[in-house]
Amino acid sequence: MTDPSPSMQRISQLASHLTRPPHPKTFLRNFTSKMASNNNSNIHLYTVGTPNGIKVSILLEELGLPYKVTPISFSKNEQKEPWFLEINPNGRIPALTDTLPDGTPINLFESGSIMQYLVDRYDTEHKVSYPRGSKEAYEVNNWLHWQMGGLGPMQGQANHFFRYAPEKIQYGIDRYQNETRRLYSVMEKQLSREGGEYLVGDRPTIADFACWGWVAAHHWAGVSLDEFPKLEAWLHRLLERPGVEKGRHVPSRHTAFDMKNKSEEELEKEAEKSKAWVQAGMKADAKR
Image (cartoon, rainbow, N blue to C red):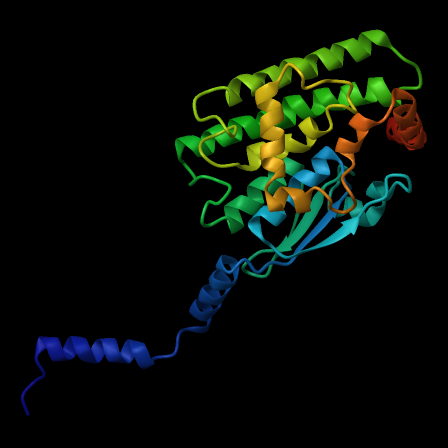
């Protein structure tokens, strides 16, 4: 019998690959990759409905990911309990747990880090992100870090001195409200560029979602959006998105927009509910 031709040999090789069962490691790698691409997850979010907390729930809803939620009670100081500190040693929300494709559990904390993880792993179609290494991806990173290092801390201090401080210190109120306004003006300028519906490029990204909750809470900080029309339009443009609308109400109803319709006397009563645990938390942290 003559030897088979090269073409027949190639057909035989292909047939053997089609019928040969995959190596167990190859099968597991392909299976877990498929699971990740299908947006299956083991995500558990530990959160409160603050501007930092709703960043992550908004992103999860935008990505259409299944997740579990555990509300954390600040009044009970649950974020300082040992079980929570195992997830986030810093004792702050939000925190998130998940399982990596190889089966390894992972704990994530700091809202920006959590958001970067979620888009890196699950936003394979770049619905709310850009391909890694692209110009836009680096620009998104700029604005995410800008929010984490600027907008959040400065507006947070405006909240504290304006609403929670045991005594009114006008210097502190003015300092942080003015800095919040300055940061809003930076966003206003960015959104005023041609085609500037979002902070970066042609789609909302984690940069927008990270900033949204803070801008939505502007009235609580004592800052008006009257001089920032582009920013106000951006705020309501994002609100029209189903993911933002649903995610902002996790784990409880989002009430930031209610504040504008309340008198200062009513707002002071709202603040009084939180002053006690804010002060208690500060004293506890000072002892560490």
